Length: 615
Image (cartoon, rainbow, N blue to C red; front, side, top):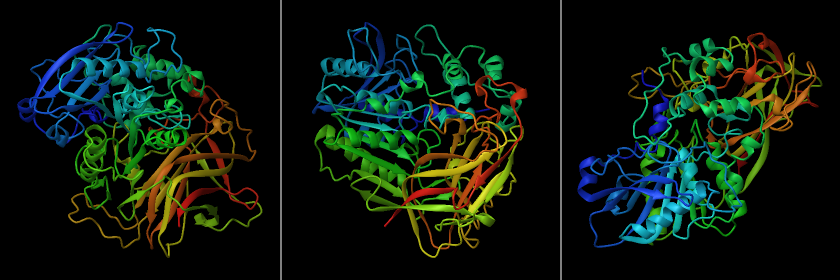
C-alpha cells in the first residue's frame, strides 16, 4: 500500500519532466562535502552546464528529503524548478541539510534561528546557507557571482532561512509553501489542534533515526488498512501512538507530546519573526488549497512586507494543492475546475522571469507585488498590495432556520445546539483514505451538512457576485456542557442546483448543489485567551471564541449561496478533544465524554464571520 505521505516527500523533486538523457547530455555532475564553520560537512551535488561559453548563476536547493541519486554517474531526471531552467542555463545545486542522509551533524526539525552568535559553534540554517554559498562561489567555476534559492515545503523553510543574514551573493530566494509555524497554522498544528493524520504519517516515515550519514532509504510504514478513520480510531488515545507504533524512535513526536501549549519550544521555531533586514529579492509562493502549508506563505509575505519596506517582496497564490504549481497543468483539483493551465502559466510567466531578471539581468521586472488567482471567476489578478485595496469589512451573521445574512440578529436570547461525541467524530471526508488527502480542501461537504453534529447556515441565492479577499475571522459565542471543546468553522460555496456536470464525467459527479469547501480550520477552545494560556470552560457559561482563518480570494457567483458549517470534530484530520480539560496528549480513555455545544446568535451575543469584500 502506497502511503500518501510519499507525495509530500517527493513534491520538491516531482517537476516538469526533462529526462535523464537530456540532463546527462547538457550537464556534468559533481559531488562534494562542503565544510561548515564548525567543521561539519554537508553532502552537496552540483550540476554544471557543459557549455562553458558563458557564465551562469547558481540555483541552490537545500533539502531534508535527500539529494538522490548519489554518485557522479547517477543523474536526476529533473534539475531545477522545472525543465526550462536547465535549458536556459543554470548551475543547479542540491544539498542534504545537516544531519540528514549523507550529511554530517545533528538534524533538528525547523532548527531555531540564533540572532546573536558568539563563535563558530553557534550555527543555524542561516549560517549553513551562508557557508554553503560562500564555498560555492569560491570553488565552482563558471558562475556569474549571483545565487538564487528555491524550495517547496520543508525546502521552502530553508530558502527562507537562507535569506536571513544572507550571503552577499544571494540575489533572490523563492520560499514556496514554506514551513513557518508548526503550532499556529502549518502542517502539524492548526490553532493548537493537532493535525493527527498528517503528523503521524509524516513522522512515522521521515523521523526514524539513523546514527551515521547514509544514502539508503527506509520502507514506508504499513497501516495494514486503507481506512484512516478506522486506523486512528482503533489507535485510541494519543499516547498509544508511541507505545504501539513509534516505539520511542521519533524524537520529534515525543517532543510534540511534551509541549501541548505554545511554550518557548514552539516560539523558538517560529521562522517568521526573524525575517527582518532581508536583502535578497523574495518571491513567496503558495496554493489556496494547500492542505499542508497555506499559513506559511501568507504570513511570511505579510511579515516581510511590514519589516522590510524597501525590499523587493512579492507573493504568488494560485488554485493549487501542496506544490501543485511545480507539476502538471493546474487546471483542476478534485472536483473543482479552474479552466486554465494555471501551473504552466506560473512556471512560464512568473517563476522563470523572476529568476532570469534577478540572477541574469534579463528582461524587465514586470511582475506585480501580488500575483493572485481569483477562484470562482478563475482569473489571475495583479495587485500592488495584498489584501487588495480597497476592501470593506463586513459580517455574515448566523440566523434562525440555518440562515446566513449580512443583517445582524435581533433575537434577545437565541442559540442552536448540537451533540459532540469524541467516540463518533465527524469525518473530514466521505471516502476512504489513509491520511490527509490533497483534494480535501475542495471536497463536497454535503455529507457533513446532513449530520446532527454539524450546524449549517447558508445565504439565499445571491443576486450579485460577492468577492471575498484576504484573511477572515470566525467569531463564535458558545457554551458547552464539558470543560473543553474544539470548534471547526468551514466556509463553503454552494453551487446552483442546475449547475452542469463535467463532460466527460467518468465518476458520475453531480455538481448541482455541490458544496465546495473553500476554507476550513479548527480551533482548540482552551486557547481562546492565548495559545500559551490554556483555560478550561465553565460548563453552561457563554464564552466568546474568536480566531482568524487563512486568506481566500474567491468570487461567490450570482445564484450561488454562501454556507458556513460549524462542528467540533474533523477526524482523523484533527485529533479528538476529550471535551474534558486535561492534557490531551496524555489523556486516558475515561477522559473522553459526550457533550452538547451551543452557538449563540442573539442581538447581544451574535456569532458571525468577519470578512473583507472587494469594492
